Length: 137
Ligand code: ADP
Image (cartoon, rainbow, N blue to C red; front, side, top):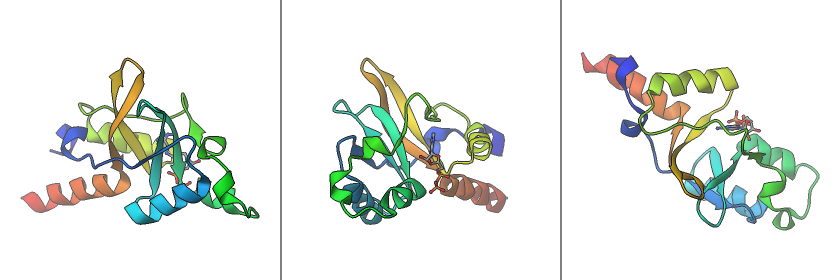
């Protein structure tokens, strides 16, 4: 049943950039990796921020030197990041996406230095889970 599905069974590989990466690099990464949300991490691979498509579009408007603007200037930053854990229920993440009006959340694991990013859950994963369950029986 849909209310028993866990994050760990549906999470995808996360795509991350470093805080000092430029807006230009982030846009390139978003296209090459074919994702709509990028996570921003520090030197310990710990979560510091999130970049959406619109964050990058907004930063690009009227800006010529996108290779000189670091993403940490424009990202949504910790502690204001909505996260989830592998053991969480997918339905709870689905509610978070609706309540906070976001497309995805990082799956994290607590470590000494912070929150390590180990996966991602997006509207696409959740739609996939929904369709699989409906077609199952
Ligand atoms: P878009 O802005 O491209 O429509 P989203 O709806 O996912 O994409 O993002 C809306 C805003 O919320 C953006 O400013 C983004 O940085 C922020 N955001 C996206 N995901 C998260 C998250 N997991 N936690 C906190 N903020 C987020």
